[in-house]
Image (cartoon, rainbow, N blue to C red; front, top):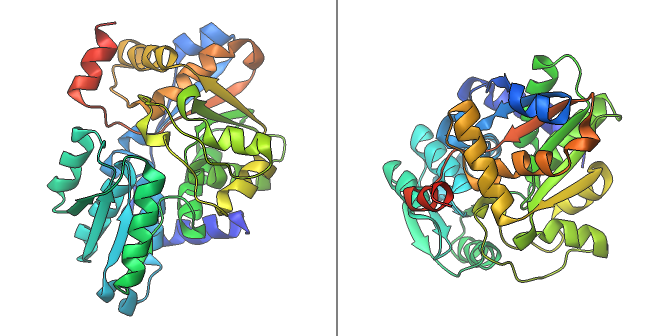
Length: 318
């Protein structure tokens, strides 16, 4: 897959429909790591996360006939919200399948867009496979959350923005679930400067991509509950993101649930923003490995904003 080509095409297709999210310096984290730290605020993206980029890129690439047949997708929440927003904006019909354990705050966000929601399974991979089969049986188009060139290309527009916004980039910390975000960012940034270091961030409770890269193949493993629900669950066999991660991601950092929660509290205290667990992954990972970033220009991808009140209570009361 030519990631740079997909990113350039996505940029032209979606630019007028998305937000170029700002970068914000973090004096506290910079002082902590004796380096310069910037936060790429995808939590301020329309629909609340970076997922809008990939979902919109895929949907806008479809033919009129494909759009008229309707679409199906599966999501733990953020991809679903991105699809729901895009469907409403362009008047396309579709169904979104969610795991039974999807946080209520993410379900409510979908309902605000008038989404048709159905539930299946407790692991996002099981939900995804069921949704794909449903789309096939009903001759509808399935919109993947990560395993699609258009998803990777859309998320990669984050890398294009970073290249415009920041003069020198040494290291970028990116969340990893299915891998479209890190694949797009890494594929694009490495194409313009192979020396940029890309680090994948995952919770210890669901480090499927990390363990798969170690094993040399996509493995099936049980994920434990994690506050980083946006990165939780399995990876589809033969996903295009696996090879991109294998070739373009330099390293991985795994963090505990307590470390992720501290990341949420830190961003609330120091930057006065509420972020979800998958966004706090990068903060937790940076703090955990701060010594390795000395004198570097480091970017943390703050990937999403959606965190439920009940979850937030547990984070703040510990």
